[in-house]
Image 1: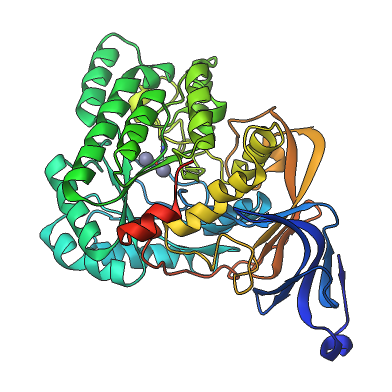
Image 2 (image 1 turned 60 degrees about the horizontal axis):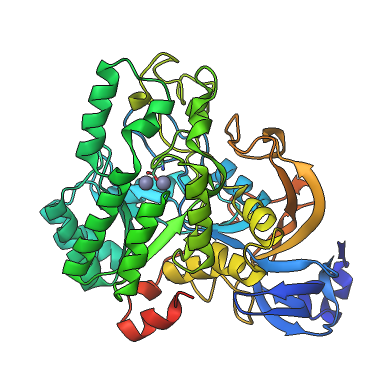
Length: 490
Ligand code: URP
Ligand code: ZN
Ligand code: ZN
């Protein structure tokens, strides 16, 4: 990387030129230079004039910065555990793994209005992020005030997606409440994200398992078997159909849930799907690791079996899933405010759910998907960036490399195998569930709005560079003709 002194300012046409890369979008691969001014792409051409700063990308893939549409950063909890990553460590980690936009969740907190919860979440982010961020909402108490005033007003203000839960005692909504919030989404043009697992079945099974003394982390998977996910997925689809409003089923783990989504899409229903690395690379055997170690891979829905992994790959390849997210849930392992909050003898019921993965999401899919020939590089860009930006109303500012788009770029180093270990990651979590995996791709340089935030193996982002983004109406929540062409399954 070279830069030129200020005295040359008048002669240079660009703040930054990324030279000679293989520039990839969701549809094309083009060999060209990228000219950046004021944080945006202003030129794409075979040969551009000098930039104040130059990055040699000769022959290397250059993709749009990743958009992580599902991650948890500094999210308040109700069980006494703490989020290991705040907006600084979480976004540094994102940048080092090629992600330049994150969308974590402003959860509706007990004793606060939804608006106050959003304000509180802004305060947590203020001045800390090194890459740009938007917020989803989490609606866990849909009161008349929330449904009638707060949610519509927040949607108008650019918080155009929200998550609802069909499980977790402190979060779950019943079907009546789900219809209520879906009605607001339909009327106001928002996207409803659904965590689909049947709460009553899980509680019933958990009670029985605990009475039988089966409380080790592996029984987390026993308590949340595939039919529990399948039933809730089908029910969410039914509620969405009744309300004629689009939904995104998040973190899909099993073949039977995929079947439900595929069935609905085949009938023309507005059902979208998301999956995450944990369902491609972990199985329930990882929950059986010696001692309490299985807690490191405990998430909901749980990882399944090898056969499910193949179905999840197929669903990524054939367009059933539109987005690939991390569901980064940063809980430390060896920490009394982390996975061991009630000690190693405690029931799986009390282990905070979720696995870290904000930094490994792109490299895992590039190595195992693109470089092993399962998906092409355009699909990689669509799943990790373009479709996500479209899904949440951030496209074309985010999610593509085009004149006028923000200059969020990743220049890839590929080919040289290395073993992943937690020491190379920048999150504040003391483990990675992918420890020891052999990878062959990692970002060499990440650029956020024209500024280098990761290069030469070192984080280079400045806290406060990351800006809050308001979201437009998600493509999926627009009238049908727009929606069909935006995410046509293959
Ligand atoms: O286990 C998970 N997925 N934890 C994070 C919270 C959620 O449900 O997405
Ligand atoms: Zn969830
Ligand atoms: Zn999540």
